[in-house]
Structures are given as C-alpha cells and as structure tokens.
Length: 516
Image (cartoon, rainbow, N blue to C red):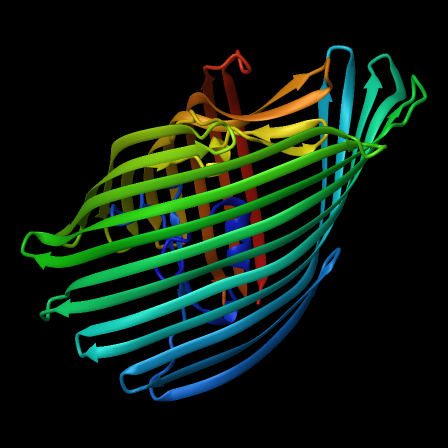
C-alpha cells in the first residue's frame, strides 16, 4: 500500500512500481502483520504501508538528488522534489528518473525417458523510467480535509537475450541437438493512479468519516523478436525459424470506499464498505516463420476480463484493564468475474462467489517485560487475469504458457502465537491451512519436443513453523541480532501430475554483529 491505498498490481509489475518510489519521499514504512477487516482480504500475508512525507508547516523546500549504483551492471537515479505548506494548503511534487541495466541468468533441467535437456537463459536489459508524484491537501475546516494524489511511472525497456536448449543422451554425454534462440524484446510500460479523498472528524473523541475514490491505469506494450537455429547433430541439419510476438495489456481499476471510526462505551468500532471494478484487455499475437519466411504457425489471442467486488466490514477493538486487549472483525466480499475469449467465438466464462473473512487478535501483557499475543485470520488469493486466459503465450517455438478459465481462488487460514520479552526477544509459532493452491504445472511432450506450462489448482496443504528472533544492543557501540526458523510443510496434491504427498522440513538461521 501507498498512503493506505492498495496498489492494484502484483508480481514483477508491483516490484518495479515500488522500486520507482524515491526513498526521499518516504516518511515511514508500516508493517501490518495481521490486517484488520478494513483491508481487502486479498493476499496470503501481512501488509506493508508506505507513508509518504508531508510538507512542514509554513515552509517550502526544493531538493535535487542523484545517485549511482554499481553491481554487475550500473544504475543511475536522479530526481527533483518540491514541498510547500502554508495555512490550509500543502503540496508535494516530485519527479524521478532512472537509467539502468539488468542481467538475468537461469538454468532449467528436464528429464525425458530417453534423453535429458539443459535449458539456459541469459538476458541483458536496459531501462529508462520517469516517475512523477503530486500530492495536494486543503483543510476545508478545522475538522475536514480534502486531498488529491497522483502517482505515475513511465518506462521504456529493451531486453536482449540468448536461450540455449540442449539435448543429451543418458549413456552418452555427447550433444545430440540444440535450439539456439536470439531474442530482442522492446517494452513500454505506463501506469498511473489518481486518488481523491475526504476526511471529516466528528466530535472530540476521535470519531471520523473518510471517503476515497481511486482510479488506476496500467498499460504494457511488448514486442518479442526471436530468431532460432535448430542444430540436429545426428542428422547434421540446422534449419532456422523466426518468431515475432506482440502483446498489449491494459488494466483499468475503479474503486470507491467509505470508512467510519466510532469510539463507543464498549470499545472502538469501525465499519465501512467498498466497491471496485477491474477491467483487463489483453491482446497477444505470435507469427512463426521458417528460414524461407514461409509462415509455419500463427497464433492470435484477445482476452477480456472483468472483476467486480462489493465488500462490507466491521471491526471492534477493546482493552480490558491494563493487561488484556482484543480486536475482532468480519469482512464479506461478493465477487463476479467474466472472461471473454474474443477470437474463440466470444466464448464467455463467468463466476460468482461470496465469502466471509474473519479476523481475531488477542493480547495479554503479563507485565512490563513479558507479552503474549495470538491471532487468527482467513484470506483469499484470487487468480490473476493471465492465469485465467485460455490463449497461448509462446516463450519460444517449443514452449508456451496457457491459462485456465476454471482456475479457482486459493483460500488461506492462518494462526499465530507470539511471545516477546522486552521487545528484543521474540518467539513465534504459526500454522496455516491452504485450500486449492494454484500453480503452473509443466507438461512435456517428448514426441513433439514441446513444453506446456498450464495454471491449475493442484493441492491442499498444511504448514507449521517455529522461530526465534533477537535484536539486542549489548553496548552503545555493539548491536547483536540473530534469527532462526524451522518449518514443516505437508502438501496433499489431488492432480495426476503429482501422485504422491509432498512433505518437507526446512530451516534458516542468521547471526549478525554490528559495530557502530
């Protein structure tokens, strides 16, 4: 979240968006380990809220910044910032620019009955990104504030890659055949978000009403050019193939929500409602040609996806004396989805479902040094549009990704027990249950030498973990930190691709000493 607003992105797009926010504009980062019912039930973990800075009273300032980071490749970041606050009006404006490079390498091994393949991917990328930010606030009265926020990110990327798919016999390490693919991938990405918010304080006991209207726009244009040479060393042939693929992805998200906080004699009550709509338009085109530029395969796909959600929630919090406190909430979300495969005779896939998501948090302060807390919550992970799209997305001439319009949401039930001592020693026990977990399952066709990666619900499961965390200043010049966790996971698949249960133990430990 940014300023308590959920960012309607996920995966790589969300990572890149958050990287574009300058640290100079961040006031603090809040970690919400157990999100109350006020927030969307989407997600399988806590929330991180990035709170942006506000201008100082009767003050204006301008800041110029630049930095250079060098690793395997280098990145230059520059920007300008202006803030102003006078009487009832405050403003923050920022413009950031990034010019950098990236490098990615990956090795994947596949074992077929008669041979095994080693696939190597090596990509070098260049990126240029502009990031504007404007935040305006006006105090209409002493108890009411109107605000407008605009954030954007506009990027031009180009990736140059080399993919080598090599086949070997089990009884002979000699190379049998290989596909060498050279790829050029120019990409343009635009996203922007606009928020209009209004805060009305009521009385002198902390009651308030907030209204938010949000619009989020995202667009990505990508053009992949692949040139492949197939070396068959057994037949001594090396035919060539050429692939050009185009993908255009657009997302529009609209949401309106209102929240109320009301202190009452029997606790603090908060409740609210939210409605949202997400519209996705995805176009993908692939053109395969042989070395004589004769078309061997053409694949086009146009997928429209709409998701509407209506939500109601209520949260209640109360302290009982100085030792006990409790927070409880319930959120109901009603969702309707519609997917349309335009080029497949406008085939429509619809779903409707309503689910309840409870949360409970209990804390007991034994004394000034010892504290125990426990929480339970239920959450949902809805499939992203690309995992529902039945159209094919080719990675290379011999491998493609395909979605599943019948993919179901994943539901998560989690429970945590914490003990802390003087805020520097923490023990934690956690349990989580996952229903209808979804993943990308890889299917190999040895006869065609093709690889299909398809999204499917594949398993239910349970997991447990125990951890200890220590952060202690031994002296003013010496800080000690340690962390250790042990995990156990029991995954129970129900698809043919995974016939056996998967049980695993894991662990991680860290020890750090900082000399100031």
